[in-house]
Length: 110
Image (cartoon, rainbow, N blue to C red; front, side, top):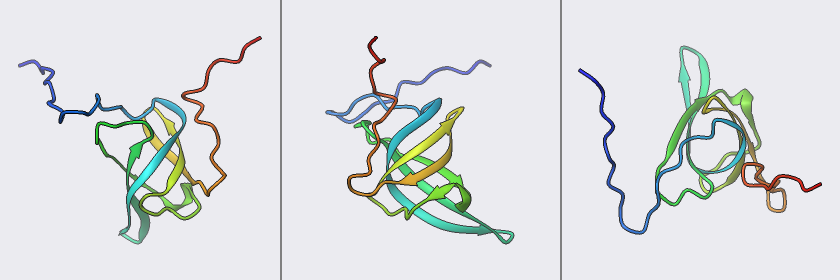
């Protein structure tokens, strides 16, 4: 038996969902963050949306507190680092502390 791609119906007025970035830093919005402890080790279950994704798709990641800089709260903007579509670091952005989203920048002109 072979796997088949299935078409996903999206609500009207939405766009195609964005996949987690392959590499680099990208802006995200925190939807939910929950502390979790497994066998004495602490983690955070993070639910987030990619900046610019209007499809309503939410992504999740289980991360250790050592990869988090700042205070993550629902609704906060963050800069997230990705490697091979895995979230490997998150930095909370304060007002006026929003670095450019390098995934959307134009190539430098000579």
